[in-house]
Image (tube, rainbow, N blue to C red; front, top):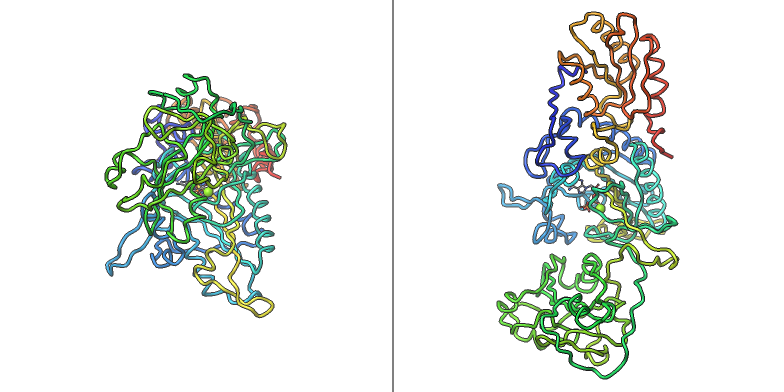
Length: 606
Ligand code: ATP
Ligand code: MG
């Protein structure tokens, strides 16, 4: 390919729309253009990168027995109603784009494909003899993200590889999950990424075990907690740890303490010398479900701990999901909401766990009693300080026994850096940021049961299929690679996913000798199967070097003054190598350098 024919438009300055370096570089290097929020054109350069990533993904998926397929993106609502996810994905904070067709039937644009594939399995899979099966596709997904941002990192339209496996029993699902784990490690390694596998929350997808693959980078939206010995790594959404010991409160009678204006833990501690771990704070929240009344929540936490909203959502789904359907959202209850329910105002900032259900009596469309949950660190306190449920006062020396209803104790707190590790309390968790590029799940039988995907087992009995699902954000991965591989001059693509492996720059296109030699080398390298770009533009050499660095082609050959004498300059983008050599030696030199890098071996793949 010739740069003059590439429609290449590079930008000198950082575009205002981009915040993180990889997004800036992809825009500046002519890889992507924004069409609307979270919607991008993948320009020819990026398309080549995506094709190379896809090729690696295909090779590794095929190697573990995957079958490539292509599922429809338009999905009928009734499939999603059968799995119980239509409401959750379309109402509230649901992220599925949906529409009504000319026959007034509802459809969704696929954010993921569990429903479609499970219905297909119900149709085609009948006997254990057909199992296991693993189908995958590489396709555009649509998600109406609440906060699309960072270019391809969080798009509303993006490319995903998703795979779904079907098994006759759970052990076989576990085996496949292990194999996919290996395939994923090879894929990311071959793409030149440093990725770590972490325990993950299974979220709206459901199921049991799940693991995410995180490309470590400062710009990552996820927080990963890891133990120094490397044996524990988890997404903060999921992470568990030992909290610090609480500072004991001296036992005594319950007393009422005047605390005017002290509505925060900090203010209360500053005024009275309490330690935050001696305080029980309560959060007054409202959970909305797809069906039934909204549920007021009274969540007790130790004053030095923070709520993990994912753990709370999972606890709510486990307790009320069956009865009230999908959890739509959880929000703090406001004074206005109390008023619109016809309820009396509450002393916000002074609430305690003893708050009585009576305060909810007569609510228009809320449940009349609280669901009371306490994080285990709060539940473990014998004696504590808490709000007195009256303005400007706290109770000192409170106990759970006198709070009336004792809340259910469970893990609701957010683990954080500095917490002690469960497997070895002498180690402290450290934090790193990560970009989630892949996620594998053991789904179990949730979808097969809901959609009637059953098979006859070896004993001749009918049962539901065991399922796994496995995603890779292909377009996000391309940008994550830039986030990990760049310098102040631009992108430094790992060879295996670079749009071109080598660029020949003609220093001065007015010089016939330079043009002739460059054309000759261009043909020679192409015939040898190297992805070559020829910068034949009538620009100054400096401009072309800058562009070559910006777009990040791993190898550059400069055909300049030495052309007369038959010499060229070979430069490695990483800066490791720069040499003058005879044009006749170029091919052999480049080939020997490329062989390993092409398969990603130079970047540490196992
Ligand atoms: P996230 O937590 O980042 O929103 P997710 O957990 O919802 O992602 P999955 O359903 O696990 O995503 O999708 C599989 C993969 O698709 C993710 O690991 C990620 O790499 C990619 N992905 C998900 N959402 C987006 C998006 N909006 N834009 C680009 N890639 C995405
Ligand atoms: Mg995920």
